[in-house]
Image 1: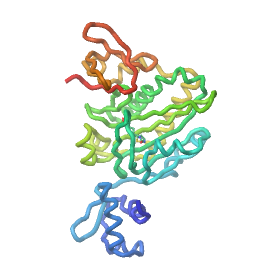
Image 2: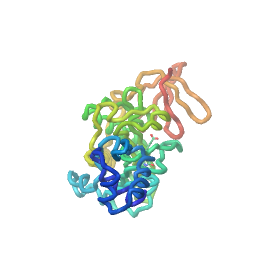
Image 3: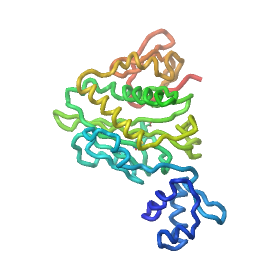
Image 4: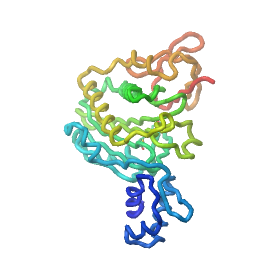
Length: 319
Ligand code: BTN
């Protein structure tokens, strides 16, 4: 994004109308330059032209702010929080940085957002949360970490419920509300040395009105669509950092949460007939819970029970 489009992004966040003339004067550039920069924001479905009167954002938004995020956080939780306007993928870029203890990267948009199983994560400007946090565990914690992904999904679901969002988890860690996807989590784990394991946790959460392409491609929902008001993403980010840090501490202390119990309360498809898809077969059965190592328990039609691990599998309600 050009430097002028970035400046306009911050100026337009209130949703007020600005004439091309006043913007040109404000930035000391031509109206043509303003028009070009506005068009960059239009590709992000952020700005509209109001006849001959000027331009305004389609909705008001609070830009990401490092200071606002850090202001409510205990300093010892993160080494740094990096806020960007555009990036290929926060998961991809955060992996390239040197890590000390914990690092966070958030962006207003992603040009190559990544979902699970090689899918694309549509990431339009200012609408949503695109969050990555990079943390470390001692190698001894590795054996337990297979359950970290559903444990984080459950923690996020319970957090959203505390904010009156009726969220449920769909295995392995999709966040659903009323049958539509609100958020997704992409976790990438790697061994850094004999003693250390590194985890990159990527979270995408739909916050503002959905862009049309998002609706068409996925059965998606957003905080705004559910409650009529978007979250302040800066406060949300601080809360998620706290939530992930607490969970990491629990795993490091070998006292992970009891996901077996928590799952049944919070699963969107618990005790329901489901289809489980793998690249080369389809399994039909009933979801009857989760094992403490994070495997999904499916009862087949012949009554037998089998454990399934995430990998390339995807789960749907049987309909
Ligand atoms: C899913 O497929 O459900 C997981 C989606 C994860 C998307 C987030 S957005 C921030 C981070 N950066 C990425 O490229 N992906 C994750």
